[in-house]
Length: 235
Length: 235
Image (cartoon, rainbow over all chains, first blue to last red; front, top):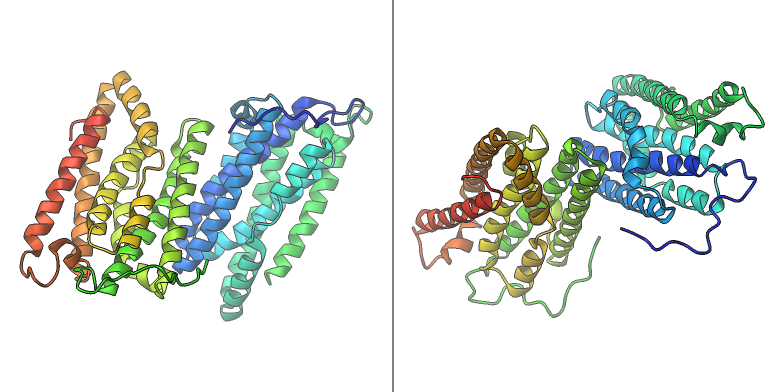
């Protein structure tokens, strides 16, 4: 998986607010472990799928996530970082999120695939605005939708049209996913102070961290409400 | 995933003992569902991995299995079969095997990846001797080792060298895997009488089924004993 060192990349332009190489390694690390975990969980959730075709569709999404993991891993090596060390700090938060949001059935799996990945993608994309152009391009490519959207929306809408009670249960489930995601994101932000400047713009704005983070979290919540509406669920 | 009909393939040469197209579809169906299931379970088992590198290694194996599933699925379409219908009859046996052999820890996962897949591969390879050349080539390619062997053997041997009790527990686990695999294989053979002639050579040898199957099962058991020895375990 080792990739030769890039000669054209300028990962940390001097004076940039993201000039802290550790912040870039942290961002790639949390994202890489997030993709690896998403791969394992999607592949396992597919067990609930009602048909083999649905199992295969969720499997193909999982395989796409693994491809993203491999690209992020390669970028960490390219930057001279140890991928394992870069990912390790984020294991408790990401494993904690998945352990607390283990889907009970197929529809909970679909809502989690769509809504959970959506929240995570918004979060990482917000951070990517503050890193070098090469890293940002990679992050945005890796976060591109792997087919969850159309697949999940279509199936969930059809199911709740036929069963109103299911809609109520899945609306509660969506709220729980958001709550757990925000709790774990705050845990990451609190424990890794290298990541906080990615939001706050760096040492020139000390003390703004919590306010700035609150703003980001509000945006995440609004995007979540739009996704729930797309599924036909109240947020 | 649809693939244009092959013009060069001669799937069912007249007079061949495998001239029954349903037997070929059944073989591809059980193998395709087996690969899909192996993908989901390997990806999930990786949760037990002690390091991220081990998680990624098991993940890469799972992704390879998914690639095999896609090739078998494409071959079923090429033969004009409905992949979902071809796989459906084998869901109870394969899900039953995995439900009854859910690994409790990382080393049980490794032994299952190596020993369980080994038994299944021997079984499918024995059947592939009796189908057309194109199908046989595909089956043999798909069953090629995806890296389980070296990876599992190295880690298990190191662990039992350091912990003799673990060796005893894993030896029992290996016997349970064999027992469950043979029970499910007999279930498949008994329920799908199209597959039995693949072993017995066809209608010219009526009544030999059970004897022939017993011989195959003896061979599977011997190969299993060799694999357990490679792991440093008594079979």
